[in-house]
Every structure is written in structure tokens, then in C-alpha cells.
Amino acid sequence: MRQTKIILSDKEIPTKWYNIMADMPNKPKPPLHPGTKQPVGPDDLKPIFPMDLILQEVSQERWIDIPEEVLDIYTLWRPSPLFRAHRLEKALGTPAKIYYKYEGVSPAGSHKPNTAIPQAFYNKKAGIKRISTETGAGQWGSSMALAGKLFGLDVTVYMVKVSFGQKPYRRMMMETWGATVHASPSTVTNAGRKFLELDPNSTGSLGIAISEAVEDAATHDDTNYALGSVLNHVCLHQTVIGQEAKKQLEIAGDYPDVVIACCGGGSNFAGIAFPFLHDKLSGKKKDLRAIAVEPTSCPTLTKGEFCYDFGDVAGMTPLMTMYTLGHDFMPSGIHAGGLRYHGDSPLVSQLYHDKIIEARAYGQTKCFEAAVLFAGTESIIPAPESSHALRAAIDEALRAKEEGKQKTILFNLSGHGYLDLQAYADYREGKLFDHEHPEEDIRKALENLPKI
Ligand SMILES: *Cc1c(COP(=O)(O)O)cnc(C)c1O
Image (tube, rainbow, N blue to C red):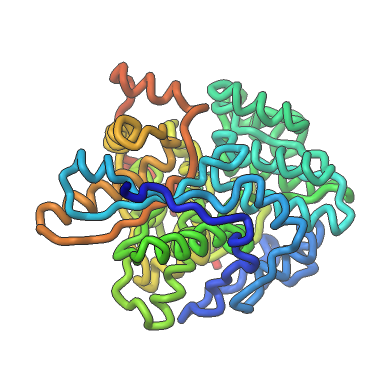
């Protein structure tokens, strides 16, 4: 019998996170205070983050221990399976081997609980009672709701208004795990009220929801803020994905030529790619390629500018060096809600700037076409976000076929799409269109970049 899935035992869950900062030739520049524009110190971040996470954010240690309490919860779904996509390979007629790591097995259906769990743990340890956070499509909000429940923390979620209406099941999931969910912009915060005044019909954006959640945390002593992507500690927590995949490929007797993941804020890309990039940066696997895939409607890496920008619309977060489309960028309503963020992880941005990784962008119809092929061969219905990685993996496999070359491709299937079926219906009914974000709009948004 041919081997299709490679499963590790509970004991093989990685016990340390891998911190790529220790191995990067150029580290990201320090974050700056939004008011003074001076480098932020730990004390500036203390009102919204616990000290353990602040220290991880700036740590230069290569390996960081995963607490027992976190490992204990990870065993609920980790190690996640690695699959060889035999049926997809056959359908493509490619000589390439395609592997995918499946993060949809988590209770929330994506990779996001990998960081929600440790974030809840460190906040609980610091005596915090409540977490405020934002969510776009609802994947992060549901992961944080779950993590809060498991550690006895209240969770308040500001959910981008358009998703609040479009994704009732995600909201119900959060509420089942005990979270309170507000449609953002909301009337609960000053930031929300201000945005509503400017535009009473605002459908919201991730940047606005972040402003609301940060304000909530900053104005309540017992409340901290949590972010589901972008930050260094979030990328760090996700590296369990790539470490497991390395072990699993070793069992299969393989090593990837190319590692692929979709890129919203960069965390699932970091999660699968960083442990492999460790080998590239140490000179052991110089030719390894890693590709971050984004939508053409939110082309942060491929069309953005590399500079200091805010993480939110109101300009309350520290300034970070990253590829950005401008903090007041308003993305079109494509279905891959988790990929609609104006910025990107400073770590991923720096690696792209230094040409250590690659990036490419696809329109959503080509991604849904790939997703439907995948559903019909490998059976899992991918999250619309993950279908961007899948599209790139398929294109790499087709190129191998054209060139008549053997190649090993690994991609991260960051989540399942069982709560995104409306998107699949819209695709089948021909209601989905590709949206290329106009250069003119990008230029305009970039004019409002903070002057450093
Ligand atoms: C949130 C999300 C993403 C995008 O976030 P990253 O931080 O870039 O990983 C990708 N896939 C799924 C399924 C998501 O929920």
C-alpha cells in the first residue's frame, strides 16, 4: 500500500518554538512609538501585552521552550497530519511530488489556535481577566474564543462588519465558546464611534477593528490585547507546523525543493517555512525556495512599499517596518477575508526584502478553480485563504511537468472551508470576479504613510 498520510505521535510534538530572528542576516528595525516615533521599550507595550510575550517579541534566542500547559492543549489536535497528494498529482499528470500539511484539524479549523493557546496561557499567568481582539473572517476570533475558554479568560471580539453579516456561523462558534462579539465599527469604543461618524454605512476593515480592540485593552486594566498574525511572537508560535513537517518528510525520505503558504499577515507562512529556512540560512540547503502567496486584491508584498507603517487605521499601534499598502488601505470584499490586511509580518517582510523568500499574487477565481480540483481529488474543501497556496503548488507542479523535472513541493493547507461554503456557491454560480487593486489607489494610500 502506498503511503498517503504521515502521522506523528503526541510525544513528537515539538517542545520548542524556532525563532528565525537568531539566524536572519538583517533583523527588522525596532518598532517605533506611534506618538514620539522613538523605539518602543517593553514598558510601552505593558498596557496591552503580558511580559512573557513582549520578551518573545524581541528575543534573539534561537529556541524557546513551549510551556507544559500549552503542549497539553496542543495534543488535542497536534501533531497535525502531513499528506502526500497522490490523487492531485495524478490529475495534474505531474512528475512532481506534492505534500501538504493540514492545519484544518484544529478545533477552530485553522492554524490560528497554535498561537491563541500560548497567548491565552501567558495572559492568564500575568493575572489578566479579559482579552480584546479583532477578527476579519472570524478564524482568529474563534481561535481566541476557544483559547480564552480553555484558560478561563473572557474574550471580546470586534468583528469586521461585513463578515459579521456574511459569516453568522463563525460568530455562533465564538459565542458557543463564550466570547462577546461586536460588529466593527461599533459604538463601544471611541475609535468605532469616530469611524461611524465619518461613514455611518462603513462595512469595516481589519485595521479599524484593530483600533477598537487596542483601545479597549489600553483603557481597561484587567484587559489585554491579542493579535492573530503579523507580530514576531505569533510567527514564533506557528513554527510547530514546519518542525513537524520536517520530521514527517524525513519519515517519507524526502525534503522539499519549494515550501509554499498563503500570506495574510504572514503567520502560517512563517509557521511552515521558517523551520526550513533555518536550513537555508545555515547554508545546509542553499537552493530551498519559499513562496508567500497573496491575493491580487491585497498585494502587500508584490506591490506594497517596504517602510515604517502603523498596524491599524487609527494609528494607535507601534510603527513597524513592513511591506504595506498604507494603513488606510481599503481592500475589496474578496472571499479570502483572512488575506485582507494592509501590512505584513516584519520578519516575512525583511526576508522578502533580502530576497531570501519569493512572493506572488493570484486572483480569486484561479484559486477557487484549484480548490474545487483539490476537493474532487484530495477530498478536503480548503479555506479560501489556503487555496492561494494550493494554486501556487499546482502551478509549480505544472511547471515541473512542462520541464519534465522531478520536484518535491510542500504547501500548507492552513484551514478547511466548511464555514466558507457560500464562497464556493458564489464561485459555481459565476458571481466571483478577480479584483486587481488599482495602482492609483495604492499610490494614494501610500501618500498617507507616516513620515519617519
Ligand atoms: C487567518 C488565516 C490565514 C492568513 O493569516 P496568516 O497570518 O497570513 O497565516 C490563512 N489561512 C487561514 C485558514 C486563516 O484563517
